[in-house]
Image (cartoon, rainbow, N blue to C red; front, side):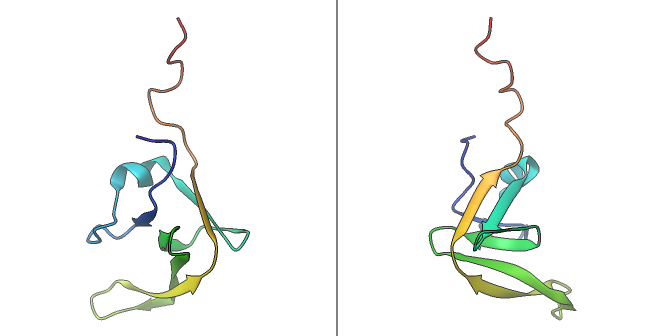
Length: 89
């Protein structure tokens, strides 16, 4: 797995942009210069994030989200397992 997070990622398992491996590593998001912990989905190239709209849910029980537009930065919070100590003999 590369050291850069995917361009588009979602925490919803039914989404085509869901990536379990990336989510297990932990993805940090900075939106408009502020770190966010409530991001449901993001797209770096398109410059938007989706966040939950309070505790409101749709008729299927999924959280209602709102799309916020602006500069998005993403990074992995944890290193890849097995990479530590590689290359040292």
